[in-house]
Image (cartoon, rainbow, N blue to C red; front, side, top):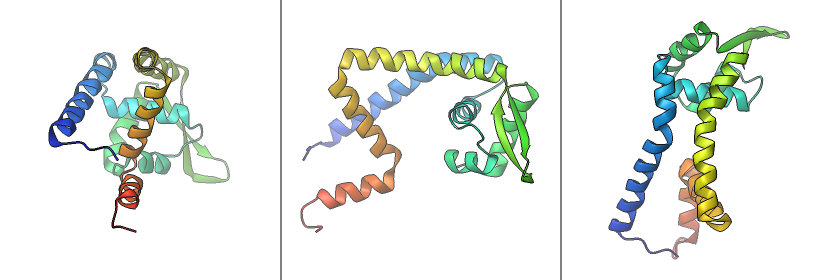
Length: 157
């Protein structure tokens, strides 16, 4: 069991803040020049990674309300970066797709982040990269992390 005190946990949180700041700085500047923000980047990213994704699927992935998603979708569509097409078997449903310009923008901004990850993983080594992925997966899925940590704690079995 890892024994972390408050100072260790504060340091981990601080490192996360600084890493996130540095990871998002360049993409934020590119997005801001177009009047866009991180939510726009998230939409571009998940639509590229999930062809045929519908707005409802995107709501579940991003865990935002319909109102919070409507404006960014409109912005991206208005800038010619995203398109929504009706699903042939159910015309009320839509599928989202990036346009060629949307693919270029997403690859540019995500590429900046991928290069930072690649450099950090190369410097840290494969074992550290695997451990980082494990920690991030646990942080990204709090219900699973809570179950895993309570299952490994003495006295909870």
